[in-house]
Length: 310
Length: 286
Image (cartoon, rainbow over all chains, first blue to last red; front, side, top):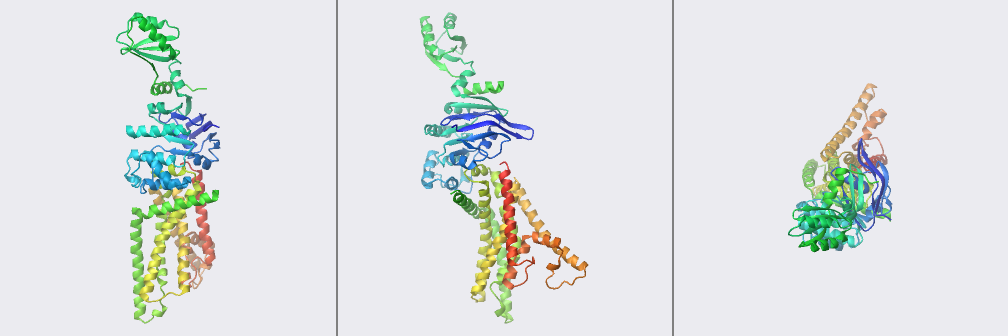
């Protein structure tokens, strides 16, 4: 059973098509990076999954529960962090956790609250009014609220926006820990290096349509024409040495790049052959590594092209 | 099991709503306003007591008179009930807390009912606290120990007032569901209150004119002689079903209906308003 599954999910606002025929599949236990430019339909999709808005057409299920008919069951097993999480400002952090914890039906609520305040780094501030919290503290409290019911699925909408580097790092560590506990995480974020760091699969929407849904490494390679890039450092490269590298079977091209050379290969294991060839030709190779394209590069490329995967 | 969960959730939301409200600045402001008005009523009652004492008619005085006089505050208190309630849902939308709330395993109807009982608790708290204090102070000032019947009537008055407030709280919840801006919600609440008030007034004027047009003698129970549309206009206003004075002094019910009829109508009003609010809220996008 998939954690999230949508079939032809569509949402129109009058003539505007916010989400069109969306077919997502999120397998259990993975971190799914859900990306897209502003206005692509990410929030609308999440709002439909959470039951805040109704789909115009299509179906969707979370852990096998239908999003139209089984909200209650879905919310029992789903933790949700909204973009810009809001709280009851006159209540303390603990007060908010206590209120939402009661609605979720958490057993040993006091113990769970203390545990979560520690997890998100808010220990010592739990009794303060939320109205006095900084944006980062609210974001941390939002994560704690989302985790109250020990969810099987966590839907996070921009979880690290506005956090300082330490805060972002802490939240990423929490996500990694949850992944280790087999929690499925559906992560919508604009911070692409963060998504690249923690996601297993990436889904990209553009103009309401899913244009990519692939394991992240496969996706990154696909944007380079399924070629890997080997980056080699040396004090100097002779043209003759580069010609020798080009002749190795499986090498697609060699380019100079600020004192380095980038070698396109169909298999990263060719790095060893390239090293032997260069050293044999008198090149003093200092370093050699597979250079992965960044998610940002790949994202910009596919959203500019906008080709829809069939 | 599910019913028990829903009940617990309604209670959780109601308690949070009540606690949050009584700590708010708005509560303090409204509380001060209401206390000043209640003290004024208490002052008038004690002046009346002194007058009766001066003319030697103290035996006719009852501590429950203060409740009858406090009934004058109802028209203000029901307005406060609408104002207190009118931004409960729209305020959650504006503050975006609605996303946190509805991402938890609660039905939208549970949120409506939780808000309803929480706000009703706040308004009832105002009234009950004010009434009990005023009643006790009047009894002490008069040096009269109320009889069992007096106390029972006083309790009935307070319970009945809660039923009356429930209509206005439900009205506030409905307005709050329809609108998305808290300010517009509050304005809408005031307009609804004015409309209900004038419905009663217009009904009374139409009824009286109708009787005058037919050269009918306006003595005794005139209400029963009003045309049905005038009666309907009056019945629409929940305050026309107020039973405080009849209960305390035995005068006729303004609505021309018996006690149970007034109670049924008020409960029906409340139920219908909550039902509509729930249907709207369930159908709406957040």
